[in-house]
Amino acid sequence: MIDFANVDGVIFDLDGTLVESSLDFTQIRKEIGCPAEVDILTFIDEISDETLRNKAAAFVIEQELSDARGARWLSNGKALVEASREQGVPMAIVTRNSRPATRIKIQTNQIPIAKILTREDAPPKPDPTALLNIAAEWGFCPSRCLYVGDFEYDRIAAERAGMRFLLV
Image 1 (cartoon, rainbow, N blue to C red):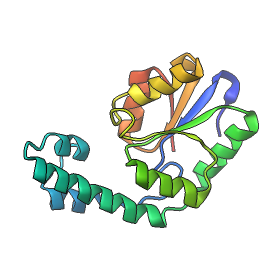
Image 2: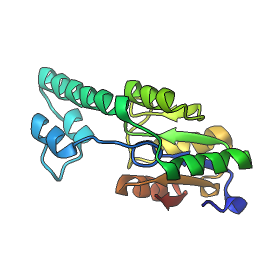
Image 3: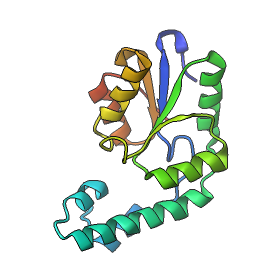
Image 4: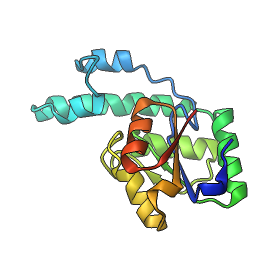
């Protein structure tokens, strides 16, 4: 659990942290021609042909929407949200997901977090911009915020933002 003694706000990742995800990144990479060592979102942004870029982006969103319909709370994530809520600590979500897929996951699982930033709102993790924007909006020093995630990009983003990180 979280020791809230030095935590003013908690920011959560979504997939793999709060809810299940069954996205098959190997298949997504294969479908859009993205090499294994390249970030999928970066790869899509760098496709020079607009038609191909739009097709790749649409495929990723289609996969995210399909995944979103079956995503359910993860017990550890739910427990962390409940603990944060009981402490009265502000909460937010920062995800690399698209806004439509995120909305489905939040609504389906009735996740009680209103502040949500997706890849349409800020550069995707591991860029720390979204985390820093939330800390600034709350008026908190980043070092007094905790980012909870399940992936290397989450850890890197937290470090770059100067936040504490909890791996789940």
